[in-house]
Length: 312
Image 1: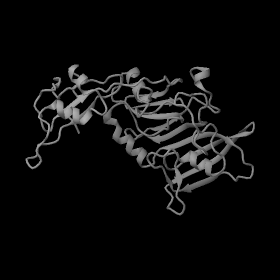
Image 2 (image 1 turned 30 degrees about the vertical axis):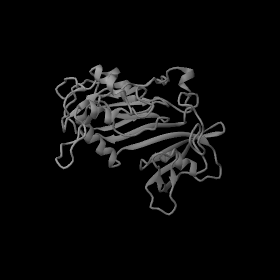
Image 3 (image 1 turned 90 degrees about the vertical axis):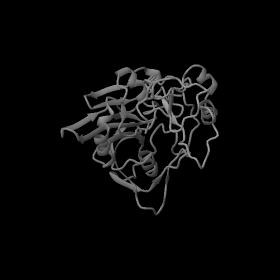
C-alpha cells in the first residue's frame, strides 16, 4: 500500500497512484528519467507530456514531478485522471439513517454504487462524499446499478472492518421485493438452491448443473397487483445476479430486466424502464454496540421512471 496521498480528493475521487519498480543490479532499468518511465507506464491512457507540463504528477512530499528528474526506484507518484462526461442519473438518494459509523441510503435505479467503468461521477460514492463531506465514505456490500433500494455505507475507514465482516458471515437479514409475472401453477413459497457463476466479461450469469449449491433464496408471493405479482425474496447468499437468476429459473423473470431472459440493447443513458427489484429491508445486530438495527426502503413497487416523475 502507498503512503498517505499528498493530493486531496477531487469531486469525491481519490487520486490514482503508481510506483516505480525497485532497482535490481541483475536487471538494469531502461528509464534514465522519471518522464520516460511515466511515458512507458501511462502514455496509452493519458497525455503524459501535458500532465508533466501542468505539474499534475506529484511525489510523496507534494512536489511536482519533472520529466527530467532522474529515475528513482520504489517511488510513488500520484495524479488525478481526466474524467469523461457522464449523463446525470435522475433520482433522489434518500438518506434513511445516519450516525457516526454508518449511513443507510435508498438508491435509485441506474445509479452505480461505486465509481467504475463509465459510471464514475454518477455513482453513490462520488455524489455523497461531496454532498455529505465524508471523504472516506464507502459501501459495505453490493447493489447492482439497476437495482433500487437500501445500501449501507461506512462513514470512515476505521468502521469498515467490523461491518464488512458481518456481511461476509451472512449475519445480515435482507428482504427484497420484485414485480414479476404470475404463474398460478407455481407452488410457493419455494427455496431455490443452485450453483451460479458469473464470468468476467459476460453480461449474464449461468447455472452450473450438478455442481454444489453456492446460492440460496426463498421466494414467496406477497400480493397480486393486476396481472402481476409482488414477490418477497429472502436471499441467504449474495451471488452476482442471484435473485434475477432464481426468479428466471422459476419462469417468472423480474419485470424490466435488461439482461434476463435475453440481453436487451439498452443505451446507458436510457432511464425509462427501471428493473422492478427493490432492496426493501435489512436487519442485523450492530457489531460495534450490539444494538438491533432494522431499516426499510422509502420506495415501493412498481418503481416508476424517475426521469419522468422527478425525485422519488
